Image 1 (cartoon, helix red, strand yellow):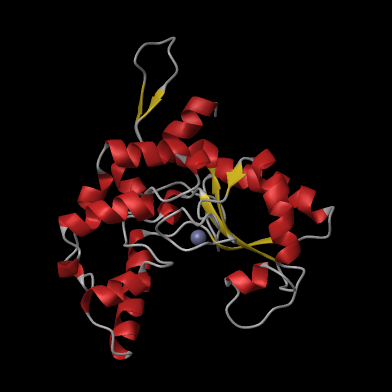
Image 2 (cartoon, protein in one colour):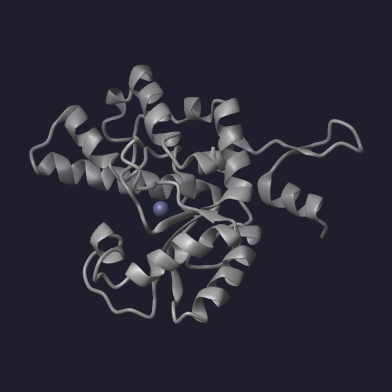
Length: 239
Ligand SMILES: [Zn+2]
């Protein structure tokens, strides 16, 4: 399978403006919101084949430094994200929060289903498998100071770029949206054009879902702000 065929298969529609021009990638809208039928590789944590190849190279390089890059989350479907959202919504409601306070609490770290970068098969959440750790693994403290994943974080900050991976949710205080996530990396070669397609094709307009807890709170004014601050609130190298 050549590169064009691969992309066509993995990423949906494919169009050529003319035979010599660089192909225009028209990403399948359903895939962008986690409702497509993407061809991913890997059983427990699926991702697009191109991402898996780059990750393998990066994992081997890290291994030479005694770091074991271990993926704990990659592709996530719309339904999976919806289950996460509804679970958190119920939990915060039981804790006494109401209305937008619940939504604002969830979107510190979790996305509205249909807006997750994890839908694309280009994103990975990673830890250092050579370290033992307890409790919640994806906490900032575990990636800094004496935390078990501090060495992984510093190695990634120096080297991830060379393998095509960029951290979207940086520690930059000017950045809005999701809080800092030192564990989350994005394969830029694919996620950049996918984000562009997501915006150009107004994919976010497709996410209305009455079964989502708090759906009535997500009006168009809120969604516009969320798009600007959360979906686009990422490292500028990924825009
Ligand atoms: Zn993530």
